[in-house]
Length: 227
Image 1 (cartoon, rainbow, N blue to C red):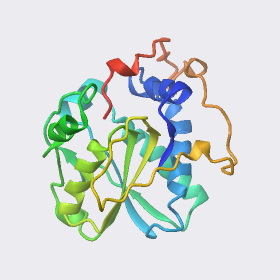
Image 2: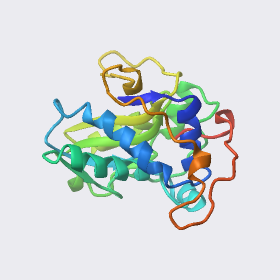
Image 3: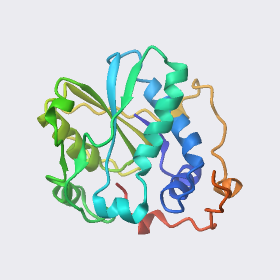
Image 4: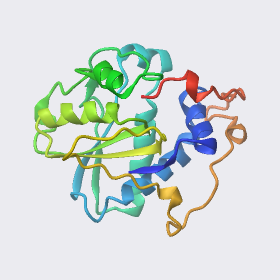
């Protein structure tokens, strides 16, 4: 499931977090991601490991943080208040990106899958064996990233892998017969009871440390990688 389309305010907000490092916006984005995850509540297992899609070491050093982890942490924080009976455990380091990959931008679906082949690994399979996993990422484009990550988790013995993302790009490739894919855009559901607009990144110019981190530059999505 995805909160909504990757466009307009959502795209600007994700870029503000991801590239301008406007960390305060992660709280609101994480709250909206929590709405997506809450949609699983009636069907999902009562205990789940919440695993953000990891960055490779070089990308992490360059960026200084993993946006998927920031979103997952905020979402779990919100869900502990709204769904206290649901045991969601944020688990970092369980899934690793064991090699760098090229930017996915501009690649075909097949190229994206080849680019990510063998990119993910579970160093300690016991950590996920027979566990139900909730995999978190910021953007779903063709599904190549979450597919590769899910395959690594299942090979390590995970009982199931559920996927929630903040945004869904329009470019969704068909999946092989037998795979189960459900995408519900929560912000297009008139009954969700939350139509507040996303905060303007410029209004969050002051970070929690008091330093100005927003510079008013939102890169074009065509020039940036989608992980």
